[in-house]
Length: 125
Image (cartoon, rainbow, N blue to C red; front, side):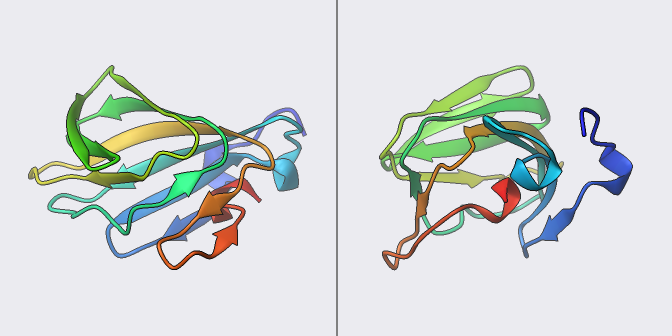
C-alpha cells in the first residue's frame, strides 16, 4: 500500500504521548518505519531506552528536550535529533504547549528497554 492515510493510521496512546504509526511492515514499508508523535505538555521523559540502529526525529511543532546518554539537548520546531545506535534516549516536554515530531527508524530495529527487555517498537510493527 503506497499511501497510508493519517486519518486511518493506527494510534497508540501512552500517558505522556500519542503515537501515530505511518510506515511500518504492517502498512507496506520494507525498509523504514515512520511515526508521528505528540508529546503532551508537562511530560517527563519516559524510561530511557536504546535502539540497535540509528533513529532520526524531526521536530514539527513546539519545544522539548532530548536526553542522549543523560545529556540534555533542547529541541525546537525545525530541528532534527539523530540518536545513534546504542544511545540511551528519552524525550521530555516541560512546556505548556504540545511538542510534535516525526520519527524514522529502520524496519527490524530492536529497542532495549530499562528492564533489559528487547522488542520491536510498537510503532514499527
